[in-house]
Image 1 (cartoon, rainbow, N blue to C red):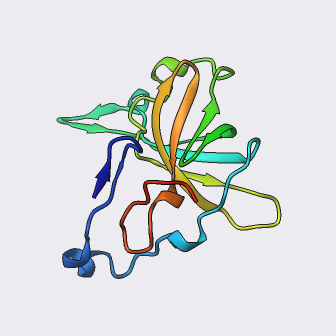
Image 2 (image 1 turned 60 degrees about the vertical axis):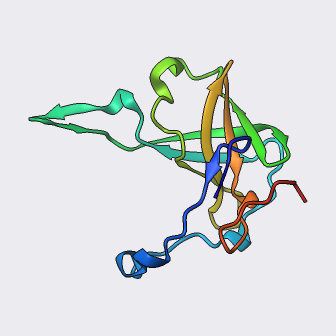
Image 3 (image 1 turned 180 degrees about the horizontal axis):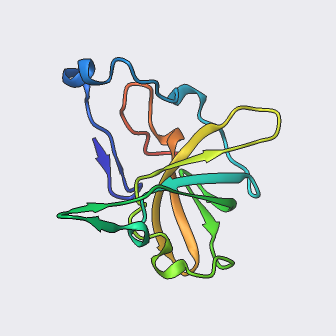
Length: 140
């Protein structure tokens, strides 16, 4: 199931259950409602960390700490204007997880990284995914 407006897709993974039975996942029922100013951490494998080892390309993981600057339904944004090398800095991290960290609580899955436009990195909130993997098309 996918939604172009939200820039997100979900997949039925039941037939692969044996391949990930030992893995842990963030529960979608516990996705937080965000507020402007919330600190977020994003993870990705940006292109600028790519290097070659023989005939293989290797991408290194990279984490970024940002803050929520605006919220629009299931989309939220972070201002990246203070990051010096933002040109290639975020290339290759689309779809990567975004977590919110609030003092006194556990890290929670907040959403997934989208595109960079005019110094603002866009995210799709994990709150748009129902527990059964279907997508909500309206914000509660």
